[in-house]
Amino acid sequence: MSEKNKKIIKFTALVIFLLVTLALTVVCLPMVPMLMSEEGRVRLEEIVGGIVRENLFLGIGAFLLLQILQVVVALIPGGLVQILGGVIFGSFWGTVLCLLGTLFGEMIVFYIVRKLGMPLVEAIIDAKGIKRLSFLQDEKKCELAVFILFLLPVMPKDALTYLAPLLNIKPATFFILSMLARSPGLIISNVFGSSLSEGNTVIAAVMFVIVAVIGLVCILYRDKIINAFKSAKKPKHVAK
Image 1 (cartoon, rainbow, N blue to C red):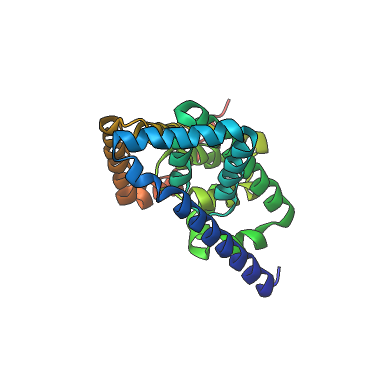
Image 2: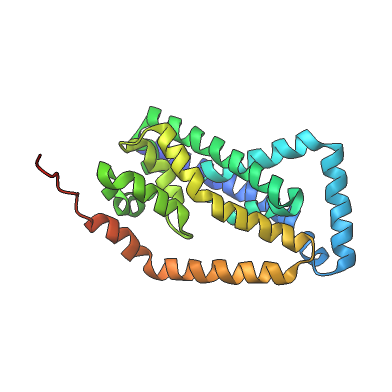
């Protein structure tokens, strides 16, 4: 892939990121003051409920597309999309739709990268991110590392989603491990969004603090966690 094509891909990703960010801002900003009062939450529930009832399949399709874009365009923050899912569809269906959208997005990325190879990865992910995860080429560390890195907050999930297709891992194994690992975070984000929309500020605040503390710990020890996988020794084969 030429440098020109890489720049086109990066520019396209940036444009999509800006458009989605603008759309999310337009949608979410009016919700913020409404969530602050009981009257506002009732009004928001009526508006959202009316839109979903009248355009159920359109609403589901639009949200799925947004979640897919969040995975494919690595710049888009996932947490905001997932919280929005909880606000609009509730904790259960919001989580289900986020899981489906994430799975579809991962499948799109996986098979496109398998087709185009490292040049596409280099066009999306910076060289530092690729080098940081280069230890995953070790088959013995790959599957466990995929699960742990997708499970913990603030880990390089976006880079890993693009690098995974180049690793010695089966597609089904990657999808199962990544979705199992992503599930707790998706559930928490959707429950947080649902709690906000229902006025359960105490639950939302507690969840926010828990996630913030875990995220802070992961930020502080992020490199150590990754280095732990790099330095892990391969298990010795016992002679029979």
